[in-house]
Amino acid sequence: MRIAIWWEQDSWGGVDTHLLTLLQNWPDANDRFVIFSNAGNQGVARIARALSKIPAVTLVSFPEGANTGLSVLTRVIRHFSLPLRFWLMKRRAQDVFSRNGIFDALLVDNGGYPGAWGSLAAVWAGAAAGIRTRMLLIHHCAIARAALRYNVESLIDIGVQRWATDLVAVSRATRETLIEQRGFFTVRNPIRVIHNGVDLAPANEEAAPNLRASLGIAGDAFVVGMVGRLERYKGQEDLVLALGELPVAALAKVVVVFVGSGETAEQQRLEAMAQKIGVASRVRFAGYVEGGVGALMRQFDLLAMLTKDFEGFGLTIAEAMSAGTPVMATRVGAVPEFVSTDIATLVQPEAPDEIAEALVEIMSNREETQRRAARARLHISKHSGQAMARKFHRLLLVSGG
Image (cartoon, rainbow, N blue to C red; front, side, top):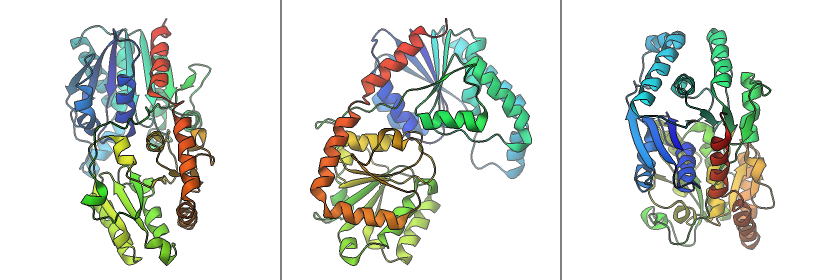
């Protein structure tokens, strides 16, 4: 098969990790991929070097107008001109496809829903271009239609269900939001669930920087890591607040390391919060860290993922499990679909006091924590990249008539 992948996004995150894992584990070496991405896609930049090592993959960039720093008037115009802009996006995608030959299948990789309107328009373009199989993959939750253009968005939703031969969500939680928030009619087009896959982190993978050395962390400190963009909904603030709830003896042993970039204002807010509650000396910001994920995760005594409202899957959790690192996570979205209290510590979202209690318990029972981590590594091996890739390959192969 010759497969087109349409991928529009601004930032980096789980979508790019998922795509790289999918392509690295693809079961048919005869298949060829062309990835079409917007010029400002930070996810492409993050995994470009790894993609270049896959001979079957070609990258094609297309220009895209700025989505940030827009004036209020421009945003209003863009909001109400969606029908025209959507049609122009469809024409753009159709032209891009036609300039790059004939494709047997199209995979449109989207974050949430509607996510990038250009991605939804690409599904329409794929149908107009006669691509036999057209899959729309959704990684995060669907949001409600905008009140002032409800009818327009409703029509696009109906179109998406007709233009796509297959709708795929990475979790049952994501699937439910498409039905509840957007009224997707599963009799017309079923929404399949293919959970994310993650490969067990090898011991000989690419090294990561030594965080203890670079951040001045004592060798006997208990290091709690959070990996992801600095965004309020990710729950970094809840971990900072939890430090303030710890007994003095426990606080003296803990260091929290935030790994990931984000807006400067959010980091400054977290730093100010830590300063005000007297825990600034226990918090470090590492920024974006290059290197092997497993090599990074193994530097933590605990990986915390404390998303406040919804998690489409929780790929960071799976990556920590694959490296044998203990996990604490909030019970949100898809997390309970593959995480239980037998293999990780689960807490309620926005509950710093509960997080603090869990930290004390974990630090007091290190042997049991490690036994959980060992069970988690065995469990996550069932969610392998190979298993995930086989499911996508089979669906693209048989779909579309």
